[in-house]
Length: 380
Image (cartoon, rainbow, N blue to C red):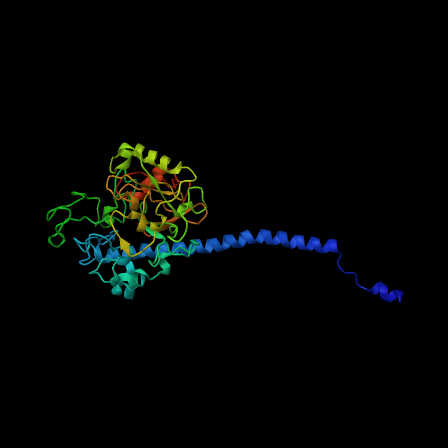
């Protein structure tokens, strides 16, 4: 009897069991960040691949047309909702032009070029989501302006518009009034409302005189806060999904001044707003991949103005009268959920990660195609 009792195996005590549970909990706590980091690395790699595909698509487009795509086929549609002109409004944006080069030929063929992109004739295309246009790290699954299909990737509109507008690689086309678009605001046939401005599209790689490896082509933006959600504030965790309005005085509300001091002042004004400042029209950010309009850069373009992952600020009193949508001098900022920076596709097709800590002057230089700036290899 005693021998049987002696052979009986002793179980765990309560203290031993608690110690084992605590050790397991610590191991799980150490493992979870590693798992999350690995998942984000995979999402960032997919985002990089999406941008590489867009860069390759642009080069294929260039091989066909000997030009980079314009930000919109403005004045291209014949019919639309506008009372004076079918094309004085939304037209096909740059992603529409690239559809044949990203294996979306059927969708491109379904787009009716004769009608403006916001018309029912193009709603099927405009409501169709394309996975290659969405960054997997963006955890917002609600469309900013339902039912339009959104897009995380944006074309480079250039450096600060207050210094020099339209200095990027995805630009508005050189546009003059034609006989079938008159009268518009009383402008006669042949009137070019931007003047004889060589900084406008169309241009080829030869127009990127700063070097294709030094000039941005695309970057990314988090989708704007949905119209069904409350407007974010500056201090909120989703502040980057909002648009905040500025009313700078004097020359701070215009464009093409050639004055970098004014650009710095507007950056400081944008980044120093009170934490309770509410967003105005955040849903504009990437809400549609088919809609394009020269002054509505908040939708499918971005600016090399405010540095990455800062907030987007638009000049409410901008001299173009279109400041609430981006205008020519807004601060439409690239943003992401990637820790520490954003992906940028350069004009040579390479994709590099640009840190949030990049200096303003270097960031501006990356954005201009013909500014003549000098960039060191470690500047970003």
